Length: 308
Image 1: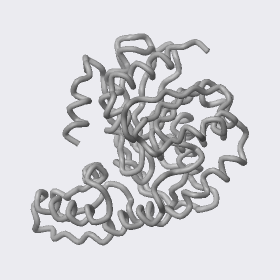
Image 2: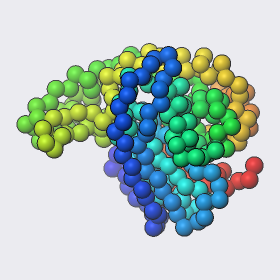
Image 3: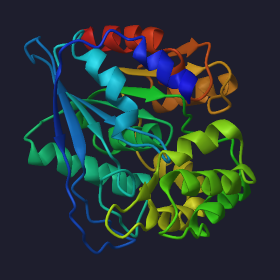
């Protein structure tokens, strides 16, 4: 993670305005027709007049709106758009819910736009967030001005359900005494997670570990129990997506050549789902926007500034 942080720090982050909003709304949710939740977000504005629809960003599994902080700050210098970095449900500072799927996350985004009177927006998502944005674009094409999908395929994912279950089992079974310091708790949590997955994934997950300043209790920012429950349903994503018409708006995929989350042989099939799409390959792994921030920023800003 130090290498990734260093890459982000190399970006020219000038004066951009940031508004941080935290919402703690809690509701009951139906598994059939998910009620939308009000999402926590940071908004970024630059010196340019906002003459184009805003950009809404969704992060990946175990992530948060902070994942888009560096890119958002740099991006508002290059585009005439407001940028919203959003915590998806069951992550970050957004509400925990008993439902977690692309349909639910799409309804959250629809409510987010409705509450702010945005008739449409550019949408960008990484990994799990990219899948949600693809579903949203095909479900509500009139709300999506253009679409950016970061290192994820709508057809398949490389991690087995079994491997992911091991990760979540390690998270939900973690039992740390409130008397432990944060550093002591992190050490134990990290050792346990390393038995389930590789070092880089563990570093990313560890960003979720929290310690209550009053009670000393440890917890995960992401809703590990619910995410684990919905793991087996991730495989149904493509069948749910196939029920919707293709999204014909401008679309760009940005993928890592060293990532298994997008396979080149799937591209012809993906173009049938997104007929007005293009793909860019960067020399990176799954965290394309962390590993190649300058190249990523160039591709995104040029795509957002196009008039097609």
